[in-house]
Image (cartoon, rainbow, N blue to C red; front, side):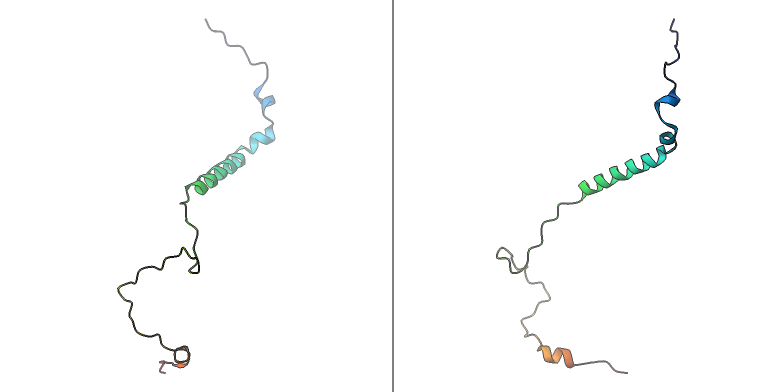
Length: 85
């Protein structure tokens, strides 16, 4: 027959009461740290942005709405107003 003995150290001596009372704050901090680490590792690998001056940069193909027309001169673009009151 199994006879249970009382533990030699009472449970109140193992963990200080102040730590026991703050266990929820500890669990919240641990959960936030775990979630933050998981979120950091779950981000996609984004390639670095290449500037158009970079020799390895390839111009994107022309879209269906591109035209061969000349651009309007800057002076005309900045002075013309088509607003009526």
